[in-house]
Length: 212
Ligand SMILES: NC(=O)c1ccc[n+]([C@@H]2O[C@H](COP(=O)([O-])OP(=O)(O)OC[C@H]3O[C@@H](n4cnc5c(N)ncnc54)[C@H](OP(=O)(O)O)[C@@H]3O)[C@@H](O)[C@H]2O)c1
Image 1: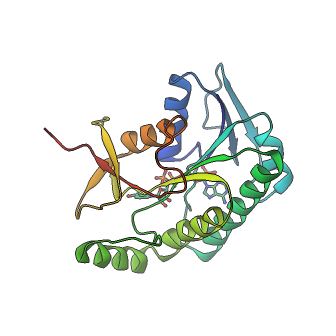
Image 2: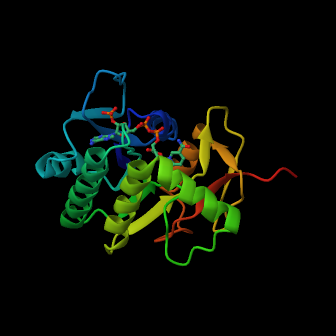
């Protein structure tokens, strides 16, 4: 499958890129700064801004799905708004091109209708929102944008992410207080969604797999 990846220069996005290539997908990476990406077979790098609707439309050409692994580089209102604009450009381009499948990296602090977070998790979300207001705000705005479309979206909501090897993950509607999940597992979960149809128009949490 040909997949457009946004945020491919980020800590999680880089792992998404590697996993997508390893799974045999053709990848298009739309990046502001191409230098950090090593060129190789089945990878096309498009240099440009998500703020530019024409660039986003061009990058999307011939792709069948999108993985958006964006995250604000700073906890500022400018970065928060930039991600909202980027998501608006992306979803408009997808609708115009008839590309339906959108897989988005979100976060556990993002509020989704129907959430039943345990009290301690609600408290944790309040604290995260307080100290990383615009980071969570950016993810919340992204969610509001794509969830209002008719696209076939899935948003994955990891709690705290850490470095480390893949240990296996599970997708669930129940958050577990204090859970941490590796960036590698989050990246695998995002790429696996290209062929998983169980979480359409849903925003499950990504937790480490339970030990037997
Ligand atoms: N850390 C956690 O515990 C945690 C937990 C749950 C969810 N998350 C979410 O996951 C997100 C991504 O995490 P990460 O560690 O991979 O972030 P990261 O390393 O900061 O990467 C962010 C990516 O987004 C891109 N980006 C940011 N603003 C952009 C803009 N205006 N236009 C185009 N590209 C832009 C960056 O591109 P450049 O390289 O060009 O800057 C980079 O590729 C976080 O922001 C957070 O919302 C994090």
